[in-house]
Length: 190
Ligand code: ADP
Image 1 (cartoon, helix red, strand yellow):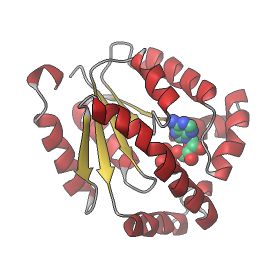
Image 2 (cartoon, protein in one colour):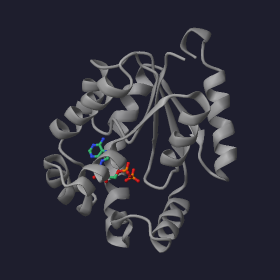
Image 3 (cartoon, rainbow, N blue to C red):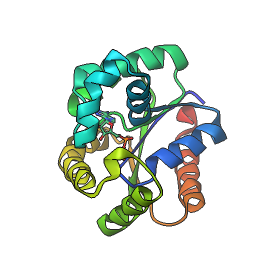
């Protein structure tokens, strides 16, 4: 399948879970910028040191660092396309940068109501999730997403590449909606 799927959605929308299972079902590479940053932080690389304070505050890592990391990763794991992007692009500058890297993009946007996002993130915090799942940082991440997502979604919506999907319910039900959306794409793209 020569397609690049961008999974978007607010923190807690389930995009990470869905990206991993979709990657396995379709045998595609999976790039999670959040996971990559966390790996760099754990390994104590220069990038990890530079990224850490941004993650801890629930803010975005600067575009130059993020874009360079994504380019290196794509060149290594999916030089011929066929990848799922999870957590990228999140800014207009990232959208433009990605245009120079990949074609055949389709964007699946998981829509979940705010009360449910908060419930899921609070649950993840109690089961030993991530350092940025603390309540104040969650509020920061959700507020940032609400402001920043629209220009990114708008860019793809204008090009007819954006599909809104209901992200409520059990993971397998959401996965079925994703498969249905991908199956409905024109044959040349799926
Ligand atoms: P979530 O979407 O639930 O906040 P992620 O694991 O996708 O979780 O991202 C965690 C953190 O990693 C973000 O809050 C941000 O600091 C950083 N990050 C991830 N992707 C990007 C990106 N595309 N641009 C800038 N920072 C990013």
